Amino acid sequence: MSSSFVPDEENDYIPENILLTGGAGFIGSHAAILLAKKYPQYKVVVYDKLDYCSCLANLEEISRLKNFKFVKGDICSPDLVSYICSP
Image (cartoon, rainbow, N blue to C red; front, side, top):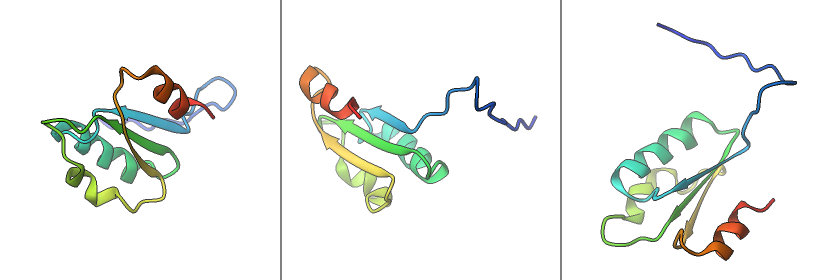
């Protein structure tokens, strides 16, 4: 089944930014790669603490894309999260 989405500019929300938490882990990095490559019109920000189960090398494939940004930080830090999410 194929579905093609045609946005109605007046009623549909179209994102400009995607914040992906835990994006340096195995599953998150695959999601980040897919989003950054498939949607070059969106800014993809990966936010990760880089603890025991994550690896920055997982994001090497998209590290040079203009629409990709990596931020090292803990999701429990409200100031950093607010800063990242502010326009």
